Image (cartoon, rainbow, N blue to C red; front, side, top):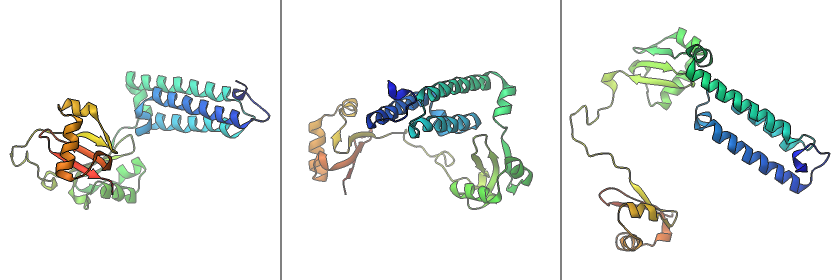
Length: 234
């Protein structure tokens, strides 16, 4: 365990062992923090992700720095982070301090400059978010709110909403998520079992309909009506 402590020099093996320990330590930390930290970087999330990355990077690049300090510091930060999340869930006053309230920046097709100023975003950012939401005209927006995670929620005026089967009172079939039965040339036998099919059925179907073999299939899915869609390697 000498590679774990401060050293004048490290051998190649010790560098590798130090990197492996750091990698699995970060994986465990990320698992404890949860997906929320990785996908929605709010204030606490951003701080913990930034600081942990900075702390754990130093012993990987400086052989004179031991990992004990980084691991200890990161563990304390994780405890503080989890404590902060607990306080956010338990006390509203703390939640208001950490997560700002939503800010209205567009209302009834009009841009609210005070809202933009409070959210600290420019017109260019607003227009960029509109384009990403596939909204070409701000006049079509009934309400736009800047959320605490930095994203903007857009709600179109009802007359600009796209038509749906529900608005036309049309009957639709139940939602059906196709099952993946082949991926990268390998059959998913668990999925086949769920639909009461076997390898023989898959092979014969591929030969009969697509004149190909399983190894040539990049992806194959099947819906509840047993309609197969096949994507070949190209």
